[in-house]
Amino acid sequence: MDNEIIKKAEAIINKNTVNGGTVHDHHCVLTLIDSFGYPTSSVITPSKSDGINWITFVAGFGSNKAQRIAKCGRASVCFSSPAYSVGLVGDIEIITDPEVKKEMWYKGCEQHFSGYDDPNYCVLKFTTIRYNLFADWQEAQGGLK
Image 1: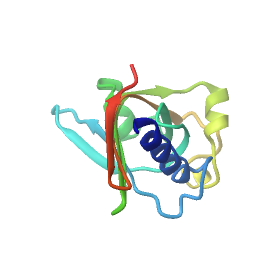
Image 2: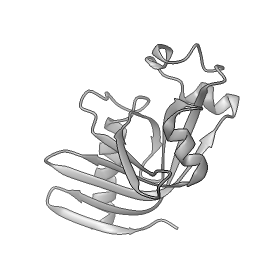
Image 3: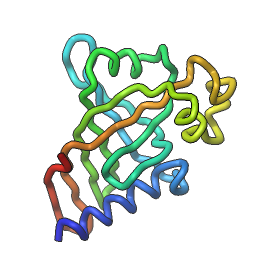
Image 4: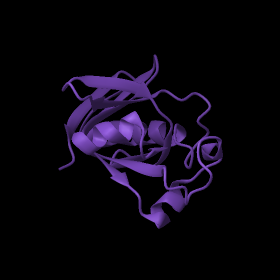
C-alpha cells in the first residue's frame, strides 16, 4: 500500500512543480530553521523534482532562505490541499553550479534575476530523508535513507 500512496504523492509533487506540471494551484511550503533555532515556514514554488526523493527551488543567494540554509541544512517541505498532504523531512543545500542553475531556470525567474548566470541566483536542493503522506484517505510514513 505504501508504494501506491508514494506514487500518488509523486504525482501531486509533479503537478505542483514548474518543470513537471502546471503550478496552477500551488500549495508548497518550505520550513527552515531561523537564527534563533526555531522553524519558520514560507510558500515557495518548486522548480523540479524526482518524485519524493528530491525537490529543487530557486532563490536569491543573499536571501533570507539561503542565509538560513547556510547555517542549518535541515528542512521540511509540505504540499497540501483539502484532499491530500505530502510532508517531507530532509536536508537542503545551496547549489551554485552553472549547469544546474541553467537546468532549473524557468519562465518567471526573470522577474527576480537577470538570467541563469546571475551571481545572486542559486538553486536550493531538498533531499528527503523521511515522509508522512496522506492521499485518498490512506496514510503512509517511512524513510528513504
